[in-house]
Length: 559
Image 1 (tube, rainbow, N blue to C red):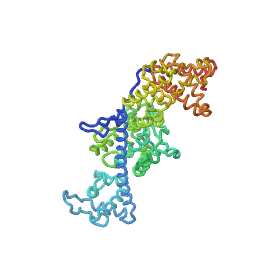
Image 2 (cartoon, helix red, strand yellow):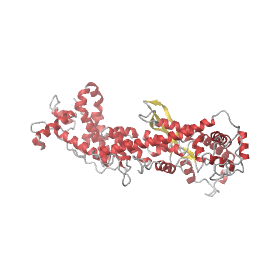
Image 3 (cartoon, rainbow, N blue to C red):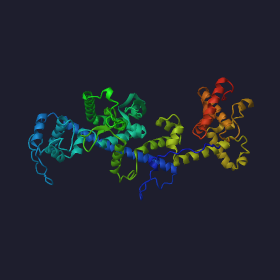
Image 4 (cartoon, one colour):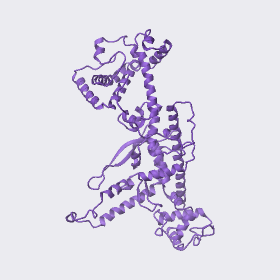
């Protein structure tokens, strides 16, 4: 059986198992005797599991620091907000004595006792949250030198910030878990909404909501739409955190940031209301520099726009958490992702690999297809594609996957040519095979469900009916001519129409005799729809369906 489909576009993004190890490094699958397909699938599974484990470790560690900060903030005793503010004024001229652990000037007292670091840390967190709106900075405009010295003494701005709210490390770890669990593409995962869950859980999973921006119009304004685009699982088998659990943890840790984002958004609205607007008569006299820049408006939309709190992945900009809160950009994700992997450069499984976020989706889809012996249908459902052809061209069309499919096609062709031989005694000579090989292949063909071809002469309809269905009962040699396309379209439409009723009435015969032919008709259909002559085939399909509806031709009916 030969298909002339023209050139097929190849998927350009490799999976994790296809990434090359650094020079001098090998993994446990490199020297195995298994085939390329088995080795690549095993590497995909190992590397994805290890990447997921690293993301879990990072998120759980960040969450534990955040929970510690919440426990310190919830203590029932301690100084009041006024006492903490007075203590800051008292420490205005305090300095740090580098290299010495002597008491810091101005820190004595019941607010920040040097002999009790835990109490001082709790007081500092309370002071930052109540008197500084949760912001920690390094400049003089944030707080006095004494408070900045106290922050340094207790662990530094990064350490204190992670006790109060989420950090970039928590964000990228949660992002990685959601990306692995949902198999989203990078853009969809970037654009998750702040209220990401849609509806109620169903079959152990829940749908996600993506908030997406379209192109900017001539007026600098972006139109947004909210739609469901996939799902995450409520629990992950043999894993510590599921995709939904990662989102729940991130929402809890980012709640202080989101509250500040709401306040900033409200302040921006009030500022616009108080501003003096240009009258309509004076709009034409404005210079381009005085008007609103479309480029700046587009950039604002990419960073979250006026309502940045509507996005899931948001963080303050700059070295501290005092900067403007924005939606994490692709550049932010890239840098944070590299920083996380750099901490595990010596890891025996993924250390040194140039892993990018875009490698996750192909890995998951290829693992799903490999689990079904190369079948792309399940992968297409996970990828939210209308047809498996899209999934294959963009994600499964990798060298090792094509090699496996080629082996399967050759194996099927070998079984098929044995199954269509009517005279078993003359089969070995006709096909040029030895009798033992022919007998073995014929047994495998019948066991695989290809007995249909050897049973055509049993209880079959008349020759006229067989000829009218457009199916050649001899060996199949297919080429994409218009008559052949018409036969393929007629066979697929006929089998689709009869499949459900026949399978209900005679399930055993359907599975044994007709299901393989139905599967073959679907394979030919999908191949033509993704081939170089797909436009011609679409026209042939439309004409064939019209003739069937008009009664000009009769559909093929399985018996």
